[in-house]
Length: 182
Image (cartoon, rainbow, N blue to C red; front, side, top):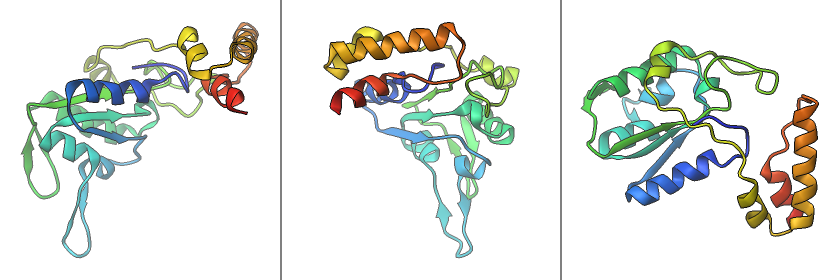
C-alpha cells in the first residue's frame, strides 16, 4: 500500500486483520534484520518479534514504512515471503497457513522524493512480491471523520493549493480531524 502520511494505511491493515479474524501485528521501519528475526540475548533467551509471531502463529503483519528500512532488513523479509520457511536465531520456522502480510510506504519504492526525503529505493525482488495499491486521501471519509464540514473544506482547499504549488508540506486528514476537535 503506497500513500501519503495520514491516508489511513495502518487503519486499513487493522481492519483487514479484523475481517480475516486474525491477530494484527505491526512494525515500523527497521534498521537491521534482528528487529524482524529477533535475537538471542546475553542470558540465552529468545527475544521474539511481531513478525515472527505472525509468521509462526498466523496473523496479519504490517511492515509499515518499508521504504524507510535498511536494505539488508528488507532482504531478510523478502526471503521469508518467497519461501515457506524462515530461519530465526533458534530454529527454522514454517510459515503459518494463516500468515498475511501488508507492506506500507509513502513512496512507490523508487526512493526519496521532495516530500519523503528519508526513503530508500526498493530492489526489484521487493517490488515483485507485492500488488501495489495507490492509497490517496478519501475526502468524503475525511468529512465524515472530522465532523465539521466548514473546517474540513478549508483544510482540503489548503491541501489543493499546497499540491498545485508543489510546496513541501503534508496536509493530511489529521489536520481536519484534530482541527475539528479543537
